[in-house]
Image 1 (tube, helix red, strand yellow):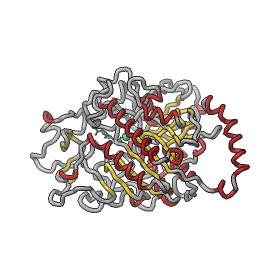
Image 2: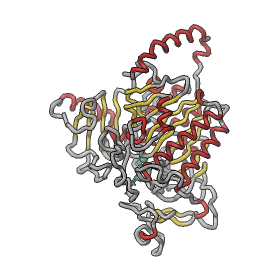
Image 3: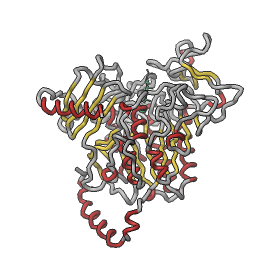
Image 4: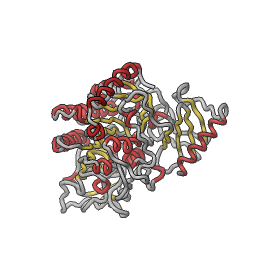
Length: 516
Ligand code: NG6
Ligand code: CA
């Protein structure tokens, strides 16, 4: 089903297509168009965090413009409500619960996606694309022994299809606060080697507990180990001082490196995975964004992310690439207010609803955990509109592979559907018929959406105690619940007993997908 605007354009598009068929030689018609592709993935950005999805307490003009010029999805998803599994699925096109160690990766995690695995990057590279990931990685680096911070950091992105990378290796709240460029930590002084570990390296090592009064942003839970830039983090590290970044400068760095990559590849097809650290904790936007919203640093970080989107669009325009580039904007999981630092996100939230009309957020299989901002824009090729088709970040591998004219091997991208026509807003093109949502790694909490039905399955004994907004939004026991998303988007009314045959059908379907 499509928005009125799109439906009225159907006739025009059909007639244009007929004209094109008449006037185009068969050879040209068969050739893939191979536009450049930029996937912009935000971190922890909720459905309701952008003004084009209804936010009124802050403005996201650049994202709104993207939506106005493209297709805005009201059922656009990421596949998990935490970072590592969503990113794993986005790159591999396979549900994270099928892979090992796909839960939230610790600082010294080895590379989770093994070399030889087909990824969206390797598929596009085979299609002649120059490929880059710039920004947050959080999928581990190095062999089984983990990252060699002072040596060659491989395997990593370059071993699974990316030509180049410029990374935040894990998360900004996990040590170490250094960049990774291709296989190395840049600016590392050999006389001051980088050490990263899980145990306090010396009794007098300052931490968020021993030196709490010196912190520029206090922690609320966890995040009380090594201090850098006045903020204590998850994990311990020493050394590498010349290589360390300031949190305030991350967004500028991603934009700078992306602009370099785009300029270098403006004459050939390129794929850029722009992986913002915003709006993950610690939320420390650049000074010029601090105080820009009444929502505190969480809102300011959204504005910083929006600025990044605007800069990338400006760069495309400068190189005359607007009509040659498909842009996809998405998020890696739903929103969270207090995720471990006292940044006033709860206190200053006011009437802002980060999850939009949905319940839950990060860590949850309620819709708010995975139904997130999702926009596609390709000037001259996507007719602006709003779509309620179900599309997911996991589908980008098969869909964008198809766009690049690539065939995907049978044993790769197992859960990625080719929903290209839906992504391009083609009239009457369908999205996914079913989608599994998960919270973290193989933790046993799942959601299954089939049409307007939504099943929750929780194998855990207890809901995880995370304050997503005002309520505890994680899936509680009992084990199975059934909701009707069209009538009950907040998933408050469990109808499993009212529709037992539907509940059973979905339980079986979920069990089968998981076992496949
Ligand atoms: C949690 C962290 C949280 C965040 C999350 C990963 C604590 C108490 N909480 O374990 O702050 O880092 O992991 O977020 O340490 S994600 O978006 O990268 O998945
Ligand atoms: Ca995240």
